[in-house]
Image (cartoon, rainbow, N blue to C red):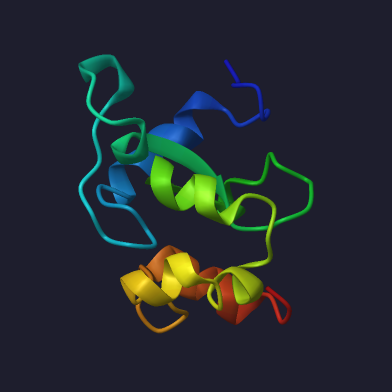
Length: 108
């Protein structure tokens, strides 16, 4: 069964197992069903800022705060914003899935 992005659940299980912390800021995340602040919830993040959205190689898990802050921005543009600068989020500090995405996609 696929979610609203067309990603098979088996692919999401692999991604969730890999990304235990936010791929951007590194904080541990809460499950929405357990309550907590929305900014701490684990969310599906599309590393690409344009479709297609159903490629598991361009999906990661990040906290709601980072996902909300990034929105539809390119990673390279988002890294220059105050949110990232205040939290020391950059192409050098992100988790491996993001670094791999950046290295395999010239413009990010």
